[in-house]
Amino acid sequence: MIFLIRTVIAIATVAFAVAASATELHPIVVSYPHQTPESVLTQAKQAIEAAGGVITHEYDLIRGFAAKAPNEALEMVKAWGEQYDADVEYDQIISINQEGRP
Image (tube, rainbow, N blue to C red; front, side, top):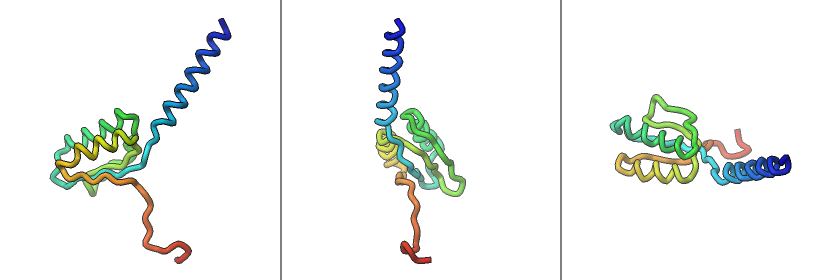
């Protein structure tokens, strides 16, 4: 009986680890034109969260948010945002300085 319980726990642990690694989250920034309805942003954020993503920041100066999301959610948000000219891009550090120069 103990062997069976340990086996089930081991299988569940491996399955969880495989599922977690298969859903890689990418840091993104999603922005919309100022006139975009709030419902569109809400729908995009809900889709990201439903797919296992996380909203990391909601912006005040621009109509948008930052998130960590799986590829499936990125594709959905891009498709829904086409009507409203959404900009979905990977979040990254950009510098105007060349490497090694102050």
